[in-house]
Length: 334
Length: 257
Image 1 (cartoon, one colour):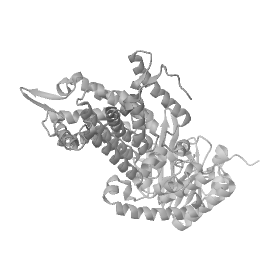
Image 2 (cartoon, rainbow over the protein chains, first blue to last red):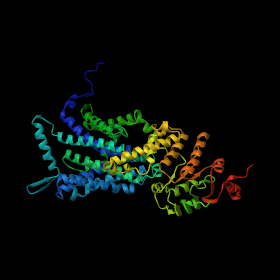
Image 3 (tube, rainbow over the protein chains, first blue to last red):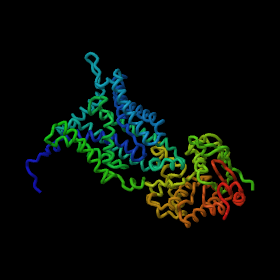
Image 4 (cartoon, one colour):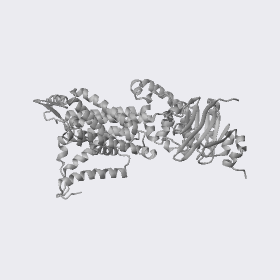
C-alpha cells in the first residue's frame, strides 16, 4: 500500500521517540491508574458507582499541603495523616449515602467532589483560592509543601546522573507512582481472592442475597469506599508533586470521568486492566497533540477529546467488557 | 406433643402508603415443624416474609425468634441468629461460581474481616478448607457437584432453586423461610426438594416455613398450615382442619366442583 506523500493528516513520529513525552505520559497514566484502582474496587467489584474520586484526590492533596504549610508538619508525617483524613471523609460521606440506591449514591459522590472543589476555591485563607497552594513566603524564608520531596528527588537524580547523564527529571516520581500502581494491583488482587473479596463480589451481584446470608453489606461498601478514598488521596499527592502546585482546577469532575474512561478501556473487574487502560488512554490523548490537521489548534484540542469519546463508544459496541474484563461476568451479572 | 414455638409473630403491620399489605398478622411456628403459609395473591405473604426476616421494617407488632425480639434487627443480624430466607425469584449470584455461592454463606469465616486476612492468614485458610469440604458435600447431596466451578448464572431454573436451598443450608440455619420453593421447577426436581426438606427436618431439626400455592404439596407435606387473606391470618391448624374451615374455603380454596 502506498500513501500519497502530501497527506493532510500528517503525523510526526518524533514525539514518540522523545523521552520527555513518555515520562509525562507515564507519570500522568500512573496517577490515573492509582485513582482508577479505587474505582475498579468500587464499580468492578462492589457494584457501587463512585463519581467522586476527584474529590478524594483534592481532600488528600489539600490536607497534606495545609498540614505542611499551615501546621508546619513534616511532609512525611503530613502524608499518612492526610490519608487518614481522606479515609475518614470517605466513611463520613458513605455512611448516609451508601444506604441509597446505586444511582443516587453516584449523584451524592459527584456532588461531594464539587463541594470539595468549590470549598477549596472559596476558603482562600486556608487554600489560597484559585491561586492554589505552593509556597509560603515569610520575609526571605520560604517553605514549600514539596520541599522534602524535592530534596529526595534531587539526591536520586544526582545519583542516577552518575551513570545516566541526561536522565529525565521526572524519573523519581515516575518510579514512586508506578511502584504504587504495582503494589496496589498485587494487594488488591490478593484481598479480592480472600473471603472478604467474596463477600464484596456478592454485594455487587445481589445485595439482598448477601444480607439474607448474614452479611453486613453496608460495612463492606463502606470499606470499599474507604480504600478507594485512600487511593484517591495517594493520587492527589502525586498529582500535586507532578504539577508542583495544588489548585481547584486540577480536581474538576473531568478527572473522575477520565478515570472512568481508563476503567472502561481496561475492562471491569480487572486490576491489571486499569494500568494498561491508563497507559493507552494517556498515550492516545497526548499523542493526538502531534497530529497535524489543517484546522486551528483549539479545534485539534477539542477533537482529541471527541476521538477519545469515539474510541470508548466503539469499545462499548464491540468489546463491552474492555480489554481485560470477563465477558461472562458482564452477561451473567444481569 | 407440646412443641415449643420457635417463631412468634404478633400483630405485625406493614403499610405501603395507604395500603395495609400486612394488617395485624399473628401466628406461631413450632420448632422442628414444617409449616405452610398459604393465601390468595396479594394476601401479604411475601411482605410478611420480608418483615419477619428484617428486609422491611415493621410499622407495628413484634417478631420473636427463639424467645427474643428481632423486629428491630437488620436482615443480616436475623440471618446470623439462624433464621435464613430464600426468595421468590431465585437470587443465585449469577456471575460467581456455584462453589463461591456456597462458601459465601458459611458462618464464622474470620477471613471476611480485612484485618484477619492480613493478620491471621493461617486461620483464614484453615477455615476455608473446612468450608470447601462442607460445600462440596452439600453440592453432592443436591446433585450439583459437577457444576461446582460453573458460573451460577449458567444453571437451569430448577438447579438454581436447589442451589439457593443448599446455600441457605451452608449458613447453618435453625429455621428456613422459603418463598415459593416449588415455583418454576419441574416435578422431579420438586420431588427432590421436598425430600430434602423432610430429611433436614428429621436429621438436623431444621424448622421450615414456606409459601406455596400447590395445595397438593401443602396438604401432604406440612404439619401445620397458616392461611392469610388481606394482610391477616384467618386460620391456622393442621392441614385437614384448615381444609374444612369455612372462612378458608371462602377466601382461598373455593368449593371443590
